Image (tube, rainbow, N blue to C red; front, side, top):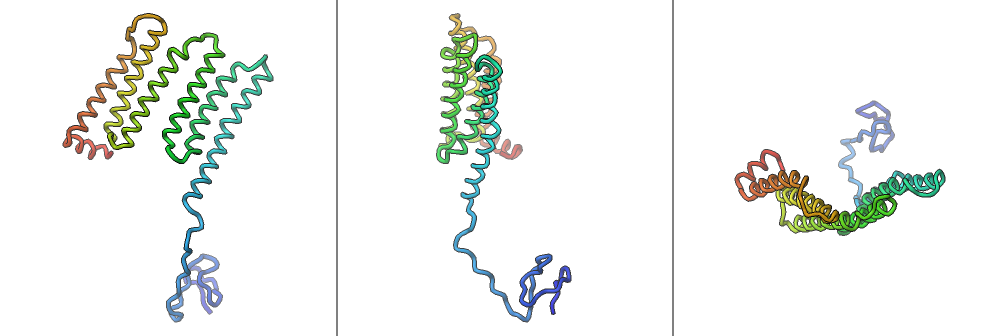
Length: 236
């Protein structure tokens, strides 16, 4: 008659584990016990778990974003004389859904497809907002070129980083330089749309600190001793 060394429960003959606390049973007189043979392949693979997680997140995105967008459109149509304010709310929710769904649905070149989807959906949303708003004429001269400029610069930074032409320091410097160029482009397009000369008002206040920080980061990256000292202090 044998008992569990951990909880004292009576054990059946030949038991390998305690039925109560699952403590392994070791009988020295029985000799070495053979380990159970391992499976030739795992029962659950990481790919299966990843696929389940993606579908789970996609279902939640539909529930939290697409259904409220549809509800806004229906309520606006039933309570008013047509669809008016719901365009803005539903469009914003659909825009968020696209930004969440595309990375979940695409497996290869996820960054590029997400960037393309964001470019198209953002332009579509703002174009629709211009159509339904009282003040028009700002999408094609200002918004479309601004979003195109920002997308092209962001794409260039991503390509350079993925090809190892940029490290973490120079990546941050390139992003700050892109922000400065984007602000200059937006203000210049606004001036051209108004038909007046290009007179910079607010963009230099963004340009100056971005350019200064970018130059500092490029200097740190070019100086090996300074770069290593900064890396030790900030752990990047």
